[in-house]
Amino acid sequence: MASGGRVIGLMVILVTLIIVAGSFLYEQHLERQRTQAIAQLVSMPQYENCRYDETTCPQSQDTAVLPDAGGMLLAIFGVLIGAYLFRSDATQRAILQELGEKRQQLSKDERRDIILSVLTPDEGKIVKAVIEQPGISQATLRLRTDMSKAKLSVLLKELERRGIITKTEDGKTNTVQLKREL
Image 1 (cartoon, rainbow, N blue to C red):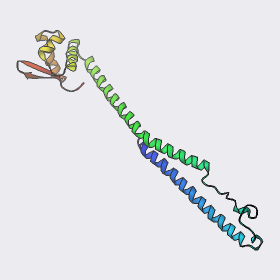
Image 2 (image 1 turned 120 degrees about the vertical axis):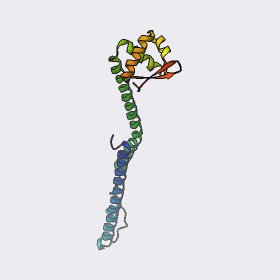
Image 3 (image 1 turned 90 degrees about the horizontal axis):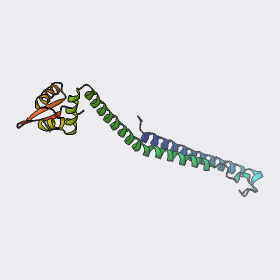
Image 4 (image 1 turned 60 degrees about the vertical axis):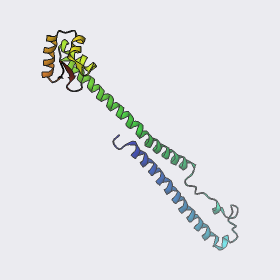
């Protein structure tokens, strides 16, 4: 949601409040007009006995009722929808963030699968072992992959040349790590 649920929610609440305020002001305007009309009628000689009740003065009935119950229900509905949109924005953002993380994770898995697909089976064994245990020693890697020292050394040099792993000297052995996260 580009503009955000908070903005839309606030706009709905604002529009609803403006409509309610406008209805209230319009009702007051109609009441003033009714009062003026009654005052004008009462000042006429034929209505001098008007006691301003329903029997002698029919204009005394209040017929202009804005906002009525339907208007109030619409106003409450508008405020509730605005509040829902305002609050749901945080939920939507959390969902979008989770989807983004899953997409990123999926990309990591896809990248790993692509890299592993272009490696030989022995190179794949080495990379999988390094993924499972970052910073693995070359001696431990030899035991995990069940390869000879010479074969492992040749394969590690090739993987290092291709930029997949890095070897660092650690005493009499080497530590093997991925060059970048797969």
